[in-house]
Image 1 (tube, one colour):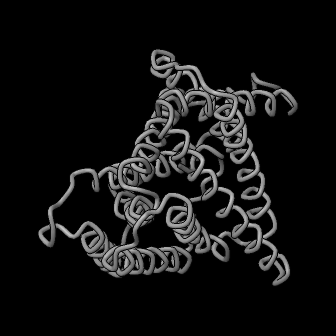
Image 2 (image 1 turned 30 degrees about the vertical axis):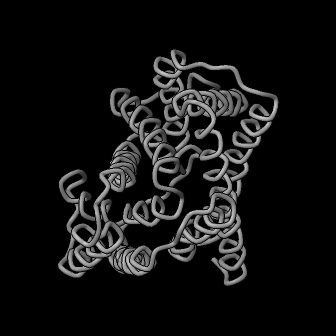
Length: 301
């Protein structure tokens, strides 16, 4: 890739993180007025419709898009992701965007730690050290023992663990299925699973609520398009670190729109976690390992 391509890819990735941060803010707003399960269900309905229409426009149609060699794992991925989105959106309403994203930013460290037992990859001592330092950063954010500890602070950590497993399973199924198949099953399986739950929590929405819901769905498509374009024009290793900017943009929305407080320990811990995450990405590049790339709009909470 040329330097110009990498520069364009970085700009596209920055735009992607801004769109997804806006999506997080809208999700928090809707979840504070309506049931989380219903909000996520409608979002995944739109996502499923999007992947079905996209599949129909490709050679082979839906039959080719659904032709997986590992259906059980693909379905589990979709269900896992939709549950993770529910957990993270609930975290937004429980403890705010700032602390939620600060803790969630540890997911690259979890992916590195779990890549051994899940995928059989070797993790060297340097990355294990970075993982340990990163989780010290998480402890700084959570601040157990310093003040009255709220179990709610563990919610984004659960979400990060679920998202990490989703990312690893995405790499696992990629050994036999193309990305288009994984994309299809993520949307369809997620929508089907969420419908079984969310339909029982249906409640009427105001016109304003439906407008924000439509914007939420559009941000998913827009963010997905920008991300795909970023990875098309630039090297993954060059733009992946900029995904951490979502923490900054989401925090800015949390502070300016929702009045979230930014504690000093959260800032310090987030810096430690992000620094450790950037180091693990750098080591993965040095070792020529495939970077974990999120390639569907719903994969961002």
